[in-house]
Figure (cartoon, helix red, strand yellow):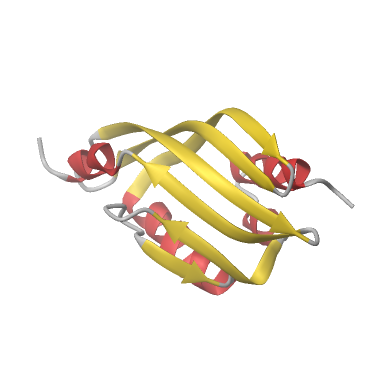
Length: 131
């Protein structure tokens, strides 16, 4: 069985290559995907369909070239912490954004059970406002 660290690394590799199916492959059916208050996708999204609709579809609709640039991962056994930056350009305003972010992943029995995002949402919000 793959370690929690490998499962999270595989998710980021799939995201970098645009492979949505692989990004979702290791999510538990009842995964709790938590986006920070102030984020355009704020809230707790339960299950892969809710994550697609409430997070990935919103990002794809509103941001061009949106990506997470991973700086490092910290292996905590069944929990993994990832540090990096979000980057992208807001489609409506044309304003670029770079915001520091931390992801906390909880993995059990080979599945992601919980994901929580911590981000400088002010920087994301500023990009959505006309200059």
